[in-house]
Length: 425
Ligand SMILES: Cc1cc2nc3c(=O)[nH]c(=O)nc-3n(C[C@H](O)[C@H](O)[C@H](O)COP(=O)(O)OP(=O)(O)OC[C@H]3O[C@@H](n4cnc5c(N)ncnc54)[C@H](O)[C@@H]3O)c2cc1C
View 1 (cartoon, rainbow, N blue to C red):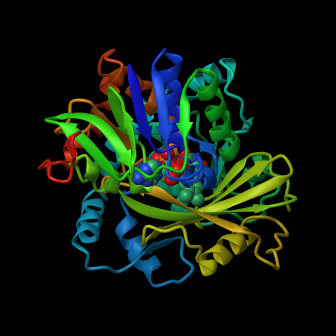
View 2 (cartoon, helix red, strand yellow; view 1 turned 60 degrees about the vertical axis):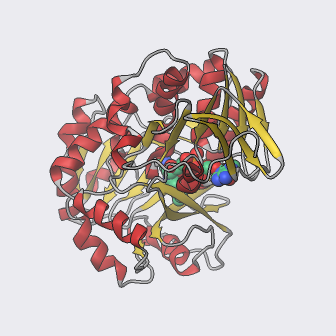
C-alpha cells in the first residue's frame, strides 16, 4: 500500500511515520524543505489542557475591541472577499458555550493518548527534545482567571489535574512571576517539545523505515479516473500511489481544490522569537493568558510566541506585533527587560477552520484521497492522535469513532471535477 502525502509539516510527517511504522510505503512531498511551515515556528506545547476550539464565549466582543489596536494579540483584516466573510460568520456562529464545550471534548478525545504515543515513538527511535515540566496559565486579570476556572470540569474529567492558584501562590510554581498577579492554573502533566527537533526526528525515522521525503515539489495538478485519484503532479513530475493525503497546513484549501473539494482553511498568522541566552530561567512553560503570549523555556534559550492575524496567505513579519510580544512579559515577569534590538522573528501560518476544529478524513468525491489539516493552534498537541487514527483509516483497519466530529463532509456541499486531469492529459 503506497501513500503519497502532500505537506511535510508536523501533520504530514506524523502521518507518514505512523504509516511507515505499520509497513506502509510512504512518500512525503513538500514545496520547500520539510518542517518549514507553522511546524517550525510553534511554541511546541503538547497541551490537552489548552485544546479548546478558538471560537468561544466572549470572543466576538474581545475581537472587536482588539481589532482597533495595532499591537493587539488578534487582528482580523477587514475584507469583502466572500470566502473571508463566510469564514468569519462561521466562526462567530460557534462563539457559544455549547459548541465550545463539545469541540473541547472532541479535541480531548483525539489527544487523550498523546503522551503515550509520544513515549512510544521515542522508544521506537524518534529522537527530539522534550520537556515534561507542566504548563502554567498566568492571569493578571481576575475576570479572565474566573472565566477559565468555569470550564475546568472538562479538563478534570480527562485526568489533567488542574490546580487553581490564587494570587501570589502562583509564585510557588513559577518564582520568576511578579507579585500582584490575579493567579493561575497549573497543569502538571503537560509537556513541551522543540519544534525543529521534532520534525527533524520524524524525518530521520521515516527515512530509516524506508520512506521517501521529496522536497521542492509544489503540487499543482491532480489526475483522476472517475472518483479514484491516480497521481499528483508538480510541473512535469508525476507521483502515483494507492492513496493520497493532503496535509498542506494553511495552503490546504488550495491543494484540496485541485482534488475538487475546496475546504475553508484560512491562515492565522503568529510569530516566534528566540531569546538567546534566556533572559529568565523558567521552571515551566508559561501562558501569559491575558496577553496571549506563550513563554517556552529550552536549554539555553527562551521562545516567545503569540499573535493571531487573519490576513493574507504569506509569512511576512509585522514588527509592531513582534514588538508587543517582546514587551508582553513585562506585566508578568519580575524585572523583565524588553530586548533593545528585536531578534529575528519567524512567522508561521496556523491552518484555521470556521468551527475551530481540524478536518480529518476521506475527501468527498474520491475513493482514495484524505485530508489532515485545520489544526489551528493545536497541531503539535493534536497531531500524534490525528495521525495514529488516520493511518488506521488509510490502511483499511476501521474508522475510529473519535474522528467522526472532524469529517470533511461538514464543509462540503458540492464536489467539482473540472480542474482534475486524466492520466492521458
Ligand atoms: C506562533 C505559533 C505558535 C504555535 N504554538 C503551538 C503550540 O504550542 N502547540 C500546538 O499544538 N500548536 C501550536 N501551533 C500550531 C501548530 O504549529 C500548527 O497547527 C501546525 O504546525 C500545523 O502543521 P501542518 O503540518 O498542518 O502545517 P505546516 O507546518 O504549515 O506544513 C504544511 C506544509 O505543506 C507544504 N505545502 C503547502 N502547499 C503545498 C503544495 N502545493 N505542494 C507541496 N507542499 C505544500 C508547506 O511548504 C508546508 O511545509 C502554533 C503555531 C504558531 C504559528
